[in-house]
Every structure is written in C-alpha cells, then in structure tokens.
Image (cartoon, rainbow over all chains, first blue to last red; front, side):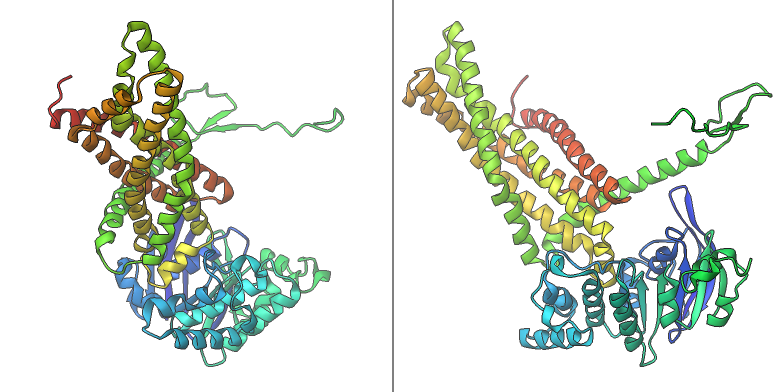
Amino acid sequence: MISFDGVRFSYGIKQVLTGVDFSINSHERVAILGESGGGKTTILRLILKLIRPDSGHIIIDGEDITDKTERELSQMRRKFSIVFQEGALFDSLNVKENVAFCLREYTRLSEDEIDSRVRELLRIVGLEEALELMTEELSGGMHRRVAVARSLASSEPKMFLYDEPTSGLDPVNADNICKLILKLSQNGRGFIIVTHKVFDAMKVADRFMFLKDGMIVFDGDREKLVHAPVPEIQLFMAEINPKTEGRTIT
Amino acid sequence: MRKLEEPFPPRCDTIEVPFRHMTVPPDSPIKIIACDDKMNTEKIKEYVNGLQDFYFLSAEGLVGIVKKPFYLKDTVEQMDYAGAGSSLIILLVSLFIGMALSLQLSAELSSLGLKMYTGMIVGISVIREIGPVTAALVFAGRVGAGMASELGSMILGHQVDTLRVFGVDPIKKLVTPRIFSSLVMLPSLTIIGDAVSLLGGYYISVFVSHQSSTFYWSSIRDVLTFENVFAGSIKPFIFGYLIACISCHMGLSTRGGALGLRRSTTRAVVVSMIVVIISDFMMTRILLDVLGFSV
C-alpha cells in the first residue's frame, strides 16, 4: 500500500533522509525506530505529502503522489488517520468541539447526532467524562486519546499513523495508549508507529524498521531486531534489558 | 567560568572555513571548504519560495472572502480580537497624539500670530496622515503580533498539518478570517481614533490655548472635504490588508521551536510597520496626483 522509492528530503542544507526505500501493507503493524531528529516524523509527513520530497517517489495504493496537488491529495489523505506528537488538538476548542470538528466540516449531521457520535468516540478511548474540558485541562495521555478519537471521527481510515504516541508519558499512560493502539488495529487496520521508545514499540508492532543517517538500516521482525548487528539498535534494546547496556552485540 | 587547572580543548590541526574566495598559503592550517555556494543557493531558493508563498497567500486569502466555505465563527472571533480588543489602546494613543499635536502647533503658531489655524492643521494631519498611520502601527504591534504568534504556534503544534490532513484549506480557515477582520476593523478603529484625536486637539486648543470652541470645530468642518476624507479612509483598508497578509505569512512560515516563534513574531511586526510607512508615502503620492493636488 505504501511504497517509498529512493526518497530524499532535506530541511534547508540539512539532509534528513538520504534515500529511503520500503514497502508497507495496510494491515501491517510497523514501528519505525531511530534517534530523535533522525527523520522519523518526516517519513509520516511524507506519507501524507504534507511536505514534498527532494527526490524519489512515494506510492500509495499504486498511485504516485509525489506530484499531486493539495486538492488531489485530499482523497488519499482520508485513507489515513494520523495522531501527531502531543495530539495537535485545536487549543481554542474544547474536547467535544475537537472531536466534532470533522463531523461539522464534512457531514450534515444534526447537533444531537454529532453529540452522540462524539460520546461514542470518546467512550472508545475511555474519555467520555472529559467532554466539556478545554485542551489545557487535559493530561498528556488524555491529549493523545482525544486526538485518536478525533482522528476516528474524520474518516474510516485504512491505516493509522502515530507520531511518538507515548513520548513524555508515564508508564501507566503509555501502556493505556499502547492498548488503545492495539484495540484499534484489531479489525485488520494496520498502523505505523514512529517512536524512540523501543519498549512501547515491542508491545504493539510486528515489524520494525530502524532509521540511521537518513536511511533504513534494519527492517525485520521482533526476533531479528533483538539480535540485529547494529550498535545503535543495541543501545535502544538496552531500554528493555538494562543489563546489556547496549553492548551484547557489536 | 573555566578553572585554571582544567585542560583546554585540544588544538585543531586544520580550521575549516566556508569561504570559497579566500586564499591561504599552502602550509596554512586553514582549509577552505566550498560550501558557501550551496548555502547561498538554498537561501535564494528559500527567499524566492517565501515570496511566492506570500503572493499566493495574499491572493487566496482575499479571494476566500467571496468563496465558500465561509467560516463565520472564526471571522467573528477574529473581528472581536482585532476590533474590540484593540479599541482601548488605539483610543488612548489617538487621544494623546491629538493633544500633543494641538499643543505643539498652538505654541508654534501663536509665535507667528496664526494660532487660529491650529484646528485646521490638526484636522488635516489627523484625518489624512497621522490617524491612519498611528492606528495601523498600533494594529501591527498588537494584532499582527498576535496573528503571527498564534499561527506560528499552530504550525509548531502540527495543528495546521492536522487541518490539511482533514482536508481543510488552512488559508481559507485561518488566513481569510484574519484578512477580513483586518479589512473591516482597522478602518473602523481609524475613524474612531481620528475622532478621539480631534477631541484631544479640541481640549488643548480650547482649555489650554484658550481658542474659540466654535472656530475650532468650524475649522475641522472645513477640512472634512471629500478629498481629505477619501484620502484618510482608503489607507486603513490597504494597511489592514498588508498587515494581515504579512503577519499570517510570517506565522505560517515559523520553523524551529520557541526561538523560531520569537523570530517570526518580531519579523511580522517589524516588516508590517516598515511596509505601512512605505506604503503610506506611496499612497500619499498617488492620492495627491489622483485628487489633483499639486506639490
């Protein structure tokens, strides 16, 4: 479904992606790991073509989206549901209005129908009681869950994209988010999770990619990840087993 | 502060200098690297792209006023912020400018025996020049900075990306209401500011300079000609449009965290103010020609 072919991207003179190639099917549960600032979020933004690659091709469902206009991309973007880092909720709106945003934009539902749909979505993410709260009153974990509810309201996505969904959260809230991610993927909808928290990635994903120096240097399952002969990956694995201190395999 | 016993960092064998046209002796530790060309090209590209984005945003934002969908709630919110929120500060600034102007003119003109012309000069200055420019500068400082910082923080918080993912045009949703509110509110604020300036001038002329109240108002009435009112009324529309476009563009171009936000907000205010002053001169020149005044 998603295919990257020699994708390069730079911010000004700083080259972030130096040739990324991969293919991901819509039912797959993929984690993209890598250092902070290594270009993980850039990959998600490229999938939705929120930014334009310097070179290479991005193919979604067999269609090359690299040269598509903003209007043409609208349909493609509705196949995905993205939860940005820290939720990206609209500050000026309360929880209900945030979740109802797309329902108001795209549907002709009555206020009662919107209200019941919002309550249903908030129940899915376990936040029905937060309906009237403003975004500044929410904790980090609640932010992400409201963002998930909002993204579910936007469309019936084929695939979810999560940008650092557990960063900055305590273990309990991080675990709740992981459970929610798994719950939403139960009916065959895959996801791509971008994170530097390998512990959380291991909980939810089946396939792992590791981004280093702007390239995918590892692509494999959990077993292969544990024994991957890449020093940086072993440093990441030290999070799971601190005794290894990232030095078991070099 | 470095303690004396701490070792200094090791000396480099070579120093890389990114200037292509610099020459050094062959045995010099300075090594020339040719990265200035790439940096310059990127900067030029960025500048041209920025200019293109600005024109696109200005045109699309304006066309959005008459094109569906209409974001009425956002527009009303922006009008409240730009209009009601700025009224007090503009009233205050206008009042004191009118008073200062009247005081200064009374002092100067009385030495020439022309004190009775204070009202007329205050009227022309306020209606044609000082009123619109003062209101625009205050508007740029308050509303322009607010627009840039709000949009900038939306960019940094990925809220604008979220809008795009949802298929909502950020220019239509964020820029058009701001342009419309500026087009409506700045002229309104200017008219109110002008009136308050004239009242300030009246207070000084009548109660401090002891001039005739009737004569002051009749002088003001004399300068309220179509030419003067037209010249003073057209400017706030142009200023409002320019301030909104510049501030929105700067806000939506924000990159690089809190520092980037500070930079874009500062740039929005500074550029808006400079553009207001320059465009005021240009409009004055054009209006004088159009309205048949000779210089």
